[in-house]
Amino acid sequence: MSSLSPKIKPFKISVHDAALSTLHQQLSLTTLPTSLSDMTWDTGPPLTEISFLLTYWKGAYDWRAAEVKLNQLPQFTVPIDVDGFGQIEMHCVHAKSKRKNAVPLVSVHGWPGSFWEGTKLIPELTEAKEEGEVVFDVVLPSLIGFGFSEGVKKGGFGMHQQAEACHKLMLALGYDQYVTQGGDIGHAVTRLMGYHYPKHCKSSHTNVAMPVPPPGKTAADGDALITEAERKRNAWFWNTGRAYWDLHNTRPQTIGYLLSTSPVGLLAWLYEKIHDWSDPTLFSKTFPPDTILTCVSIYLFSRAGPASAQRIYHESARNAEELAERMNIVGGFIPGVKLGIARFPYELAFRPREWEKGMGEVVLQSEYESGGHFSAWERPDAVVRDLREMMGKGGGAEGAVKGRRGF
Image 1 (cartoon, rainbow, N blue to C red):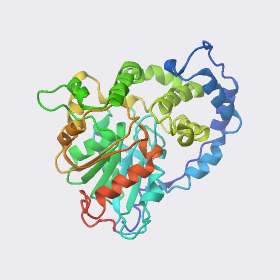
Image 2: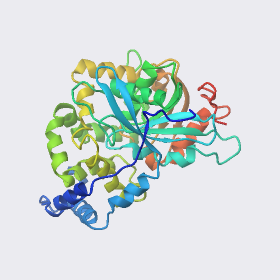
Image 3: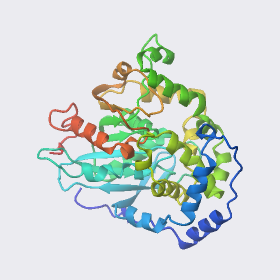
């Protein structure tokens, strides 16, 4: 792509002073709940943690400094026509390598993340550190209804529509073929991109995999084929960590009132998952207070508002049949898309590695001793390593994108 289409507009984050003033008024008026003396993370974020972050938010945290840092990234808004929903303005970071044949990569976030999750990948992937190393053009979209993308005004905008939007974004940026990376919701979205657009989506890397069980097997049969630590992590998540999913899936508007009117309520709702879903051995380094509050602020100041993002759960699974169909597509065999799958010990759910072969042409399976659900942020080195191994010389997806080998 030699030049930007006139419809693609450069973008800078600029939160109005009035919004910041309102935020600080709300923070100053916050009344925190009571807490039992022996309460732990088992019941939610401890009062001491939220009290500390509230104090930090009111004093030391500087959104304007975070805004300046984020605005160093090359950001754009792109009008995307989504079938049945008309034109929607989509926000993205589009960081191009100096190498003209760089591999186009779209890395898609989930909840409670945003485009910021992938920002650590940019300097590592757009520049070669060694001779012959593959490089990438990196695109980090804000999913529709998240971050600085526009929201929608009617129901039915689910994972399939998010996949359509991300695919059309890549086309609008000048990439007829591309590769993907994603976890959480981003895993489902990128898998659906491969399912719907295999002539364009040529390879995918994911940091979570939920393959459908082989014929004659059930999900429970897989327990004997994973480690004890993975079984415990599965049990923890399914028994105590899924209340958010049930609420988002069934009553997203109810929680939306809290998230839209209480900044500290929004903080607690997101912080619980950031804490519980990340690697505790890396947490203090990867999620210091400034990072946590920037993550929360992106939701607070999002274009569609804090109530928007969690609706994707409901809109993607309005009934059991729709959910089962999507899960079977995402976890089933998708031909024509070379697949790499990373495994991190603090992911949320695990199924046997041998079952992953049923998801497509698997060219890479990696395993790491640290890292969690937010792997692009917690372990960008691991994601970079995987992508270079897949797409580089001798990799299983080398040359997958026509005319863009990246080295």
